[in-house]
Length: 305
Image (tube, rainbow, N blue to C red; front, top):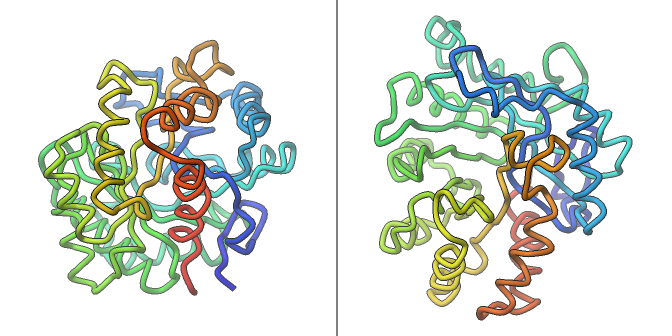
C-alpha cells in the first residue's frame, strides 16, 4: 500500500481526493516574530475555515506548522474528526529565525531522531503522527543551521519514507537545498518545493522542474506579491513545457487576515471557486485540474514505504 499518515492514522494514498498541499490551521510563531497576523490560535475560527474547505469539495489538507512554529496536533486531530477532512501534520522546521536553541546544541543525528519519533511514535507525547517532513532556507542564503536541519530531514526521510517539503523565502535558494538532498541520494520526486510563485522567473522555475521535483505555487489571491494573471501564465508555461505532472497548488493562507474564519479573506474557498475557474478559462482542462489537485498530491504524499 502507498500509505499517507494523517492525524487519524494511515490511509491509502488513493483515498486522498482533492488536496491542498500547504495550509495552516493552527500556528503560534515564536515571540521574535513581531507580526502576530501569522498567529492562528482560535480553534473555532480555524475549524470554520476547514469546514469551508470541505463545503467546496476539499478532502485532504496538509497542515504545515512545524516544531518551531507552534503546531498543535491535538487541535488538528479534533478538527479532522469533526469535519471528516484528511489532515496531515508536519515534523521539521521552518527557517533559522524561528529555531529553538536546542537545534544549535543537538547533533544532526539527534535532530533526525526527534523527527523520526514524530513520524513513528507521535508528536509531543501524543500518538498523533506526522506525515510530512519540512525544512527551509532564508532569503538568498541557507544559514548553517538550516543546512544542519536539512541534512537531518534527509536522514529522517531515508529512515521513514515520509515526503519532504521545502520552504523557500521569496522563492530563493531552492537549488541549494536540493543539492543537500542529492548528497543523500534522495529521489527528486519525493520533494516538493514551496512558495515558488514568489519568484516568477521562468528560467529558474523550469530549471527546478528539470530536476524532477514537485513545483508548488501557493500564492493565488495574494495580489500584494503578483497578480494572478502572472501565476496563471507561469503555470501555463510549466504545462506547455511538459511539467503538468509536477505542479502542486495550494493557498498557504497562514495569516488571520487571509482567512474568513478570522474575519479576513480570500479564505480556503478561493482556489476552488475562483482560481481553478480562471485556469480553465486560460488553457487548462478539467483533466489538468484533476492531475494537479488529485493525482499529483497522491503521487508526492503516497511514497512507497
